[in-house]
Length: 381
Ligand SMILES: Cc1cc2nc3c(=O)[nH]c(=O)nc-3n(C[C@H](O)[C@H](O)[C@H](O)COP(=O)(O)OP(=O)(O)OC[C@H]3O[C@@H](n4cnc5c(N)ncnc54)[C@H](O)[C@@H]3O)c2cc1C
Image (cartoon, rainbow, N blue to C red; front, side):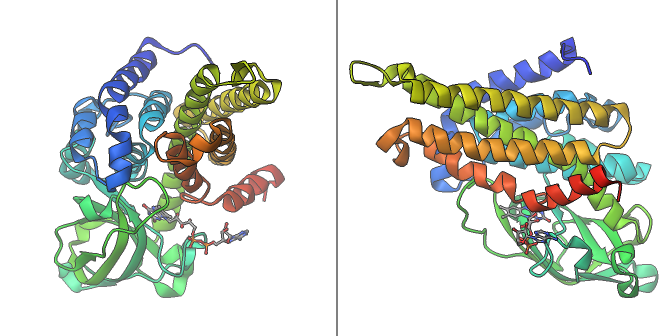
């Protein structure tokens, strides 16, 4: 693995870093406080190529690699974790599977708009009674002759859902076949059979709207199916492998934000006649944070590189997500401690990082599920 970034990867990182500092960071506290979807920022990210970083240029994307993607996502998430996850879902869970498994007609219909930020995608796999056990989903797709498919069911926690233009949705086309009977569909969010519930009221990433999705006799054409019938579960797991690298990068951005804020504060705040950064208890905290952040970044780069090389990267992606999300939570918790009482107030962004960090241990597979995936990889099961 080459730790020297290519000029293109450096450009992706620098472009994202500059945009994040100028346009995203100054808005982050307000986005969080008002639970405000940053639609204008998403449009601008699209114009910069950030909403379809790895989508081939032929389909309107930036045509870069996964390493460039994680570099950009770390920078955006460092400024605002909510904006980071909106970008991550669109890139990893919607553009990725369409670019990999779509027909030319499907790519033509969706990718240029999704990759440019003119449209936004969401991914609907989880349901009220199936999250970790995604293969147990109940949403059904019934064939309706030449008319295509009729979808019924309820999806949970759909990030971007209330503001999305397109839903990548998993439903069972053969209830007798279990996970092998699940198929994927690309559904226009304006379909009259789709209705989103009110946005979920969340602990963190409050600018990224998330809601239940109700499907009531939603009719979609045959061409809406993505991949072959029965391929949906595999497609979803593949999308989540890539998605986990993205969430790891989001977690890394949150960890960096907490660490950088804590370091600056520790150099300014004085107790007992010296900056708290000079007390060993605090400087050791900063040393541990910095070490763990670097370790997480290396694992993310390794997983991204493996993905770019075209081989299997399921275990590496799960390891990167597990470590980065746990690092984000440890670092954010210690950063609040460095701020003392001020860390507990909403006046400083560190309490937001603390709240934002938690979700990275839950979505796109909980830490328990990552350990399960890693154990399977290690044990060869
Ligand atoms: C803010 C937010 C955004 C989300 N966005 C999306 C989205 O865009 N699209 C989407 O499809 N989903 C989304 N999700 C859903 C998310 O992926 C699930 O919440 C997650 O996978 C866990 O599923 P669950 O909530 O049903 O928990 P459960 O699966 O019920 O798990 C409960 C607990 O049991 C543990 N557990 C379960 N099974 C095992 C096992 N075999 N071994 C050990 N421990 C186990 C879990 O780790 C967890 O601690 C989102 C969730 C949230 C909160």
